[in-house]
Image 1 (cartoon, rainbow, N blue to C red):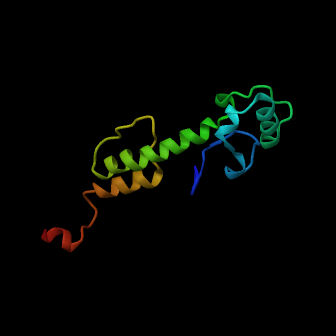
Image 2: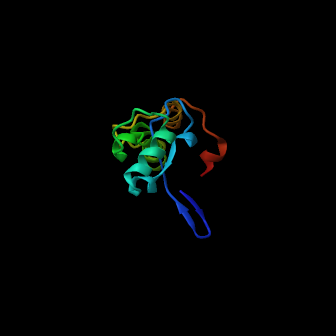
Length: 121
């Protein structure tokens, strides 16, 4: 979302053009409420697909991108904190990162040497 004084523009990330950067795949949401001829013209131009026939928002949206973004937020808010506290994975559909496995295993390793400051507390 882009905000400025008197301006607010919401964007979605599309699947096309394939291989383009995320910023190049941003499409303003307002285009889906424009007239059909105007919407078709600009979507053909922005998506770089002259043969596109389905202009439905759900068909254009990059679902993998949004699933990945949601997964990173869930990982930051839930799974990393749970792993660091020794709780089993509360969200089984989201895989732990390799670095998180190593970090959590090191936190509960009984053979790991502790710091002297930790022993005095």
